[in-house]
Image 1: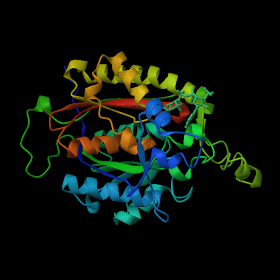
Image 2: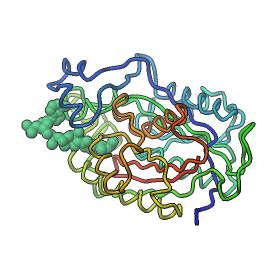
Image 3: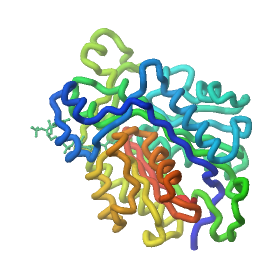
Image 4: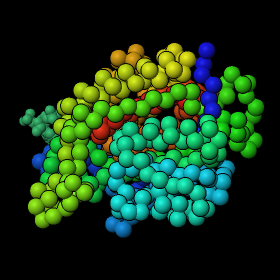
Amino acid sequence: MHAIPKTRILGTGSYAPARVVPNAELEGVVDTSDEWIATRTGIRRRHFAAEGEATSDMAAEACRRALSAAGLNAADVDLIIVATVTPDSPIPSCAVLVQKKLGASEIPAFDIAAACAGFIYGITIADQFIATGAARCVLVVGVELLSRAVNWTDRTTCVLFGDGAGAVVLGPASMKRTGEPDREPALAPGILSSCIFTDGSLAGALRIPAGGSARPADDEVLRTRQNKVHMDGQDVFRTAVKQLTASSTQALKASGLTSRELDWVVPHQANLRIISQVSQRLGFPLEKMVLNLEEYGNTSSASIPIALDEAVRDGRIVAGHHVLMCALGAGISWGAAVVRI
Ligand code: UT7
């Protein structure tokens, strides 16, 4: 039997900065090639924020678009959760600035730092707030401005990432959008299951080593770029294939669905080879995986909500579809969720 959802997606929205940077442009920055990036990762382009454009600007725009899709406005929102590891500044949180930019009222707003798994963490937290009645309408936004967080002399990382934001408006499963037809209770839309994990013993595999309280940024930190992203790509790759498969299987089981009943998988967009291996292990065809890393690169916490929004807007994902989402990143933290649209 399918799980009974408490929380549903009422609208999706996303935003990518206008500047598109093809792989070829990076050949002039580090010793790399379009061919290496495309064949090793599947990435062909990414979007970079304009000078003066901040993480909170991108997040607020994605939220506005999600609210508009839901037929709601900022006054309806009673909680904002921003998943990001690239906030405008440490204090205040990015969520505070998003609240201000949306003109929302005195509602709680906070950030969560679960890196690429941040969106799955965000909707899992929101689901708890809504299920307990502590919140009714929650904005969850995954947003990253990684072009300013990478080491532009390290070819093993700087070619991978992009900037962008994706948001969802969540509300009680019983809530209907204007004009939406009634559905049988057994087909009610919503989050059927979600699971989240962290293995801190792998904390060193993907990190920004300094610039925080343990080692504040000083001349040495800046000179050696210890305030930028460092990654052991192969460790993360191996863990991703294993844990994305395991958490997806767990979320699927908890949802009561079989993989045949799934219409789409929206995976975190880090590497096409990871996604292919997960697709094989899950026995789920690659054609049914929503892919957009060719266009955006790895946008960390934004990657799933951007891909979800695109697939909803272009009509691939429609009402009644069952969608599995899964992500893994720094922490190492990961998770998966199954949603009926
Ligand atoms: O979103 C958070 C989660 N992150 C991920 O899931 C990322 C997981 N990891 C990966 O996607 C892959 O490990 C990478 C794409 C990061 C790297 O791919 P790889 O196949 O694991 O490459 P590698 O690290 O084994 O490097 C192979 C070769 C090396 O050269 P040598 O030692 O064989 O001569 C690298 O120096 O490729 C070289 N290389 C590059 N060459 C051209 C590494 N980066 C580049 C580059 N351009 N940008």
